[in-house]
Image (tube, rainbow, N blue to C red; front, side, top):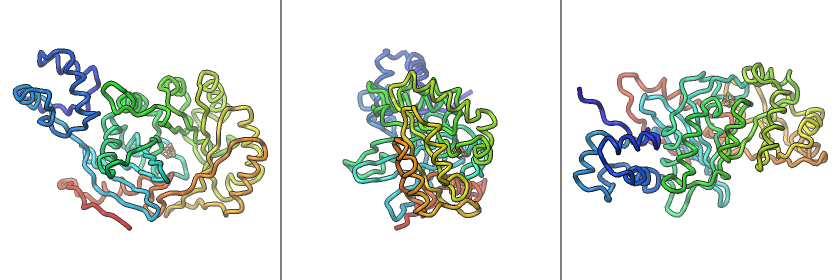
Length: 365
Ligand code: SF4
């Protein structure tokens, strides 16, 4: 029985090794293949010019290179771009590119939907569809980079898109290995990669070993607040357990932690909240990013008024902590933090199951 060709991008290093062994090729071919995929970023086996014509033919019989297709690309007024990709099984996932002066930050998704239920997050409303595979995560990076103008490149990556990355740790870790490997991989510095978690603490030690940055989405200063805002994760790992895991993480890590705090009007934005936050994080090597809530239709949370945000920040700063205000980016195309998921779930409804072809590229000015 004829088996269908395997997607080279979906293989681990070990599986590429097995493939080259199966073809009775010398060992160095493994590295050559990986370099074609991740450094030269070819989309066609025929472009692998250091393989003979006969070898390329043999490879084509057993393998292919399949990249996820772009369904839409929206550009917000502030230059933030939101990409929607169609996966091989017709699910869809989003990636956001945020330009800021000379920085280009890519916000990557790790799951289609999310198993957690943070009340302020649009992705949560999709429910959990499935984990992304490593190549679907790396593909977001390679595909966006391929669309950027010459001389322009991604300067940092954050796993803050759809999904809880630490609940898909193995695939996220494999993706990070491919993105950071210097010999055959993309060669990106792990110091420029941040993995953001709602507090899935069993994986904290594993993330530390990868050498990337860890950000914790805190959003509440009491268990009651976290139960209200992030019920699923707080039921498993409450505030005390989370902070204890953070302390342990910092004991063995050179890198400081980042705490993210989504500011919700009348919910967690009082001076008492600010003081409690400062007390909770006192003595931890960390910085705090405040994220004023990005409103979206169907959600009753509101963004606090500018003076409330300023007072909150000033209160924490007066207690000696590093606290920054994250500017909202791309909110007119629902590309801002907590706003991902609408396009991905809508596309599933828009596309008839028997005829899922790519939608035309949609660019807003
Ligand atoms: S905030 Fe993150 S962890 Fe929480 S539901 Fe949304 S995607 Fe999942």
